[in-house]
Amino acid sequence: MRIKHLKFVFSVVFIAGMSYASSRPEPKQPVVEAEKEVSVIGTGDIMLGSNYPSEAKLPAADGKELLRNVKEILRDADVTFGNLEGCILDSGGTPKPCRSGCYFFRMPDRYVNYLLDAGFDVMNIANNHNGDFGPKGRENTVKVLREAGLHFAGLESICETDTFRINGIKYGFCGFAPNSGTVRITDLAKAKHLVSELNKQCDIVIVSFHGGAEGKTHNRVTKTTETFYGENRGNVHEFAHAVIDAGADIVFGHGPHVVRAAELYKDRFIIYSMGNFCTSGDFNINGISGYAPIVKVFTDREGRFLRGQIYSCLQKDKTGPVLDDTYLAAKEIKRLTQLDFPQTNLTISDDGRIERKDSASVTASAAKCPLINNSPVITPLSSVSLADEIIAYSRQFLGRPYRRASKGPNAFDCSGFTSFVFGKFGYQLNPDCRSQVKQGMRLDAKELKTGDLVFFKGRNSRSERVGHVGIVVANDDEGRFTFIHACRRGVIIEAFEQSDYYKTRYITGLRVLDETTAWRKGKNDDAITIACLEGKWNGPGIYLPDATNIPLLPLPKNPNAPRHLRKK
Image (cartoon, rainbow, N blue to C red; front, side):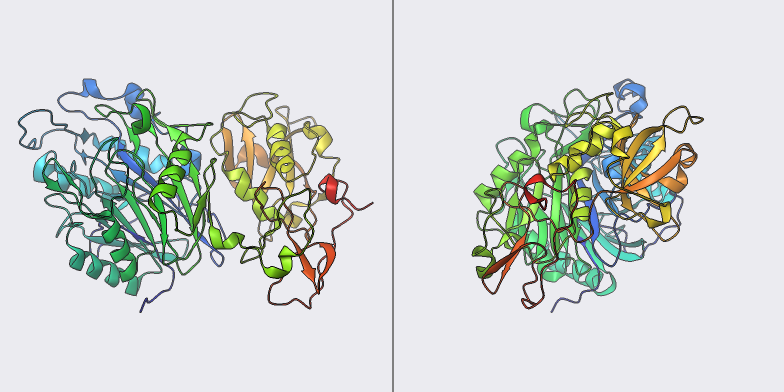
């Protein structure tokens, strides 16, 4: 029997029983309300630059800019995970024995600050390069990560598991690999024991594994034991299912240096490889080896998968991952998932949205209802507000660059961003923020809710003219809100109370959404959910499958509502 509170299992090994003093930056702001859901981000291999045999091999700007294009995305989760491919050591150590063609990865101690700045919380150190410089390299890696306040696991008898709390939720983490000195992916009995013990004490358990054969010809999940250069690299399919059976909630895979398929097993999410994420130096990043996805997973408090998002990134020239507006990584994961797990309960869109198939099932009563704009009607398992859908959609553009007068999707200015996002949902906002402020009901900061607009003065703070606009992500009763907006730093999420710049420029909030409007995605991503009660269509509203005697909420008389749904 699964004992559950809130947990994720990462197949990565953490230091057993250790909790480290917090020397890391201020804790992340809660990304979602804890009582609703939890968000976890995973990435593939990270090797920020090697100082062996000399520092001449280190990246430009000493590596400080490698994660600049994606850190706003990485910061936007309750927990952010990555696989640290190599050891952390300024100098020394004993290079591993090598006959020919070997790679040695030794990152300077100071590079741990780049992981912290980008928003990473937990690292897997179970892989074939952690031992590149012998015991000294491993010992220093553990020391540096510990002193930085990062959580980690993966080394046999040293750090096999770890637990930590973020935003009131207790996480368990463990990591596995087929290599000497790591917690072995091939020892299923031990893996299940470690996960089971974490499951008893944690809300969410996350498992990370480094496994499977490597290279472009090894991008399929074979469901058999994989060997590479004569080494048993594990049966990753058997392993992932075994740790979920033992209590894991999320399983993040890496090791093949290319992406692999995703799967949903017992309502728990698995991705079998996330490829190379940020790999400076002697890595092949040509073609599919350069696909560098960021995989964001949302679960409920019991670890059940709700939805996800693949942010497609590319590595092109050793300068770090950049967002890819052609979505190559998401399309490849989608293709491989359809090949390897055609029956799994997941759908992946070309732009990276991951959804459950059963959340898009059409009930018999709803199937009898008329279509809206020829869009098929669907009834998800749970009701989600239009405001929540707008924020979820807007997050996929985090990190996109700012460009004056740009209306998306590859770059935005502030009002171009808001009009583009709301336009996806049928709301025709004026592309100029000085006109947008006239399109709804003005609000005090304490009245703001998710999905409202917020307006600020422009660069000239002495002028009272509107010059900037964003979308409220969350708010409390005191008007301490967070908002997503396009600014000179790109599309980011910002806390109003922590921004000296915007605190002095706030003008007003604005509500253009009606609280009773519900939004549901169909095949065209623009269908409004409707329900037929007693065989009669009463208009758009929220479908209540267990309360068919409750009348539907009426569509408001909102001039900004989708044109085909405006009341006459």
